[in-house]
Image 1 (tube, helix red, strand yellow):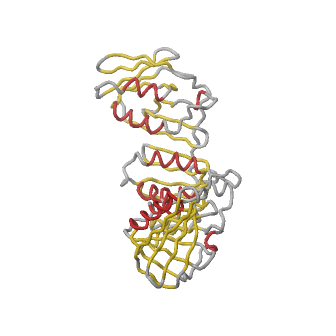
Image 2 (cartoon, rainbow, N blue to C red):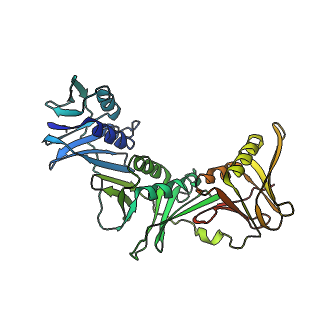
Image 3 (tube, helix red, strand yellow):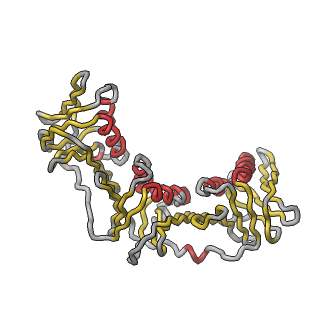
Length: 373
């Protein structure tokens, strides 16, 4: 139940935190308590919370003149109520149930509140594996592979981001069985306990949208418990439900000895694949040929309705002539994860997968299965 509350804080800081927290609130939820953000003053702290039962977040903001209490409010309504003022400070208080009073330099606004009687507790665990990681590293790890997650709900393990530890590195992996992306982040992990979790795609996207609002150079603590993945700092706590499942033993399907290796400029490769994509069929099929005799990479496609196109670029080619047909979108997707100017295409023979990686960068590999003729 709503109780009397009062606090004064920086308006811009409040606005920023509300924008972050509201990403978790579910505006279409049946339960009213999941539609809003919960703000409470307790133990001399002003805390802003939201949850959709799969992801929970709470953030603490600096405040003065605090009186213990709590309320639940529509976050969009709160933002709209304060964004048209040039005030530096804001005071929020409540003297009666069902509304709050917002005081700014240019006047007062009364905002109706929501029923907070069944707002769920955000679980916190403190027994699992912990490690510290920079915000930019976890963002990089997630963004490097998330596009390869399956959208099917039949196999939950494939519609999840897989995170595990390999020696001193944290490894992010995703696959939809047609392609697989792996990104390794060097964290200099010194403990020896195993770390292996599966985070559903939607939960991962919620986490990413919040982390992207933080300073990339900040350090955060990651903690893994049985069914919970938590990320926190001194003034922020995010928890996500994980799934109980076994990710495929993907390392067994990664071929080792390439029959042909080609190094080309990433920009040039991107351009000819995008052009071929315009003329590809309903399956997005294109053919990539490594021409050993002429040292060329040729990308072609034929579409009975749109036409056909053939383009070639030069590259450094070692090995035999080989070609592979695949979904052009799968290649375009992965190029964002290659941070070097040149990419290496590794061919393993007819009917075998293609592997894409960056020149001199062993932290990222991307495997694409061929399409049948």
